[in-house]
Length: 185
Ligand code: GLN
Image 1 (cartoon, rainbow, N blue to C red):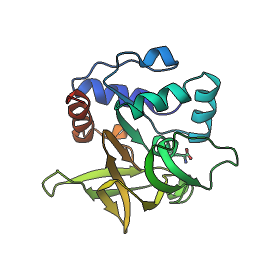
Image 2: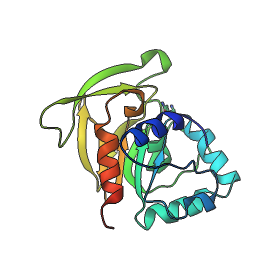
Image 3: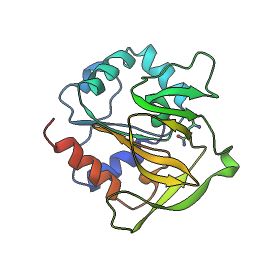
Image 4: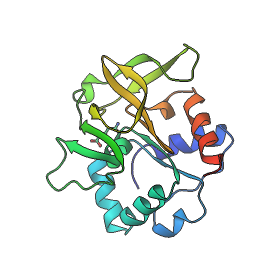
């Protein structure tokens, strides 16, 4: 709908996946996984609602479609959003409470080396751009933290990141997502 989807397409194809842009409910048919990219969560949910995509997408993820959500995508998935627009809708499927722009405005964007679960102690370059701040979590597993806050979580077949792996040349998290999407439901 909006945001950094082209960068995800490049990363996913480099990781060996075939991709399709999803703009309507019919585009969901037969997918193994979906990426909810970074961008502007309020615009995304408004467009998804207008296109009749919000409910079918919620259904598909509930039924186990593998999901990689980055930044705004995490906000779209979250159970609870503070500092959103008054009427900001979302999918409410990921058991986290996030504060929109919780790390500050565009000028406060930063990069941090993150220790991510399953990466054998090697760090991952985390690019944060007006990222959501995870203020509390429920039934998720934390994959990485920064300054005492979760910045990567997983819940079932969902991986959600506050940062932007698609803006780096590091494919490890996209490969992990492709593996998850190809694993039996
Ligand atoms: N601040 C944006 C939002 O509220 C997210 C920023 C991003 O995805 N880089 O949707």
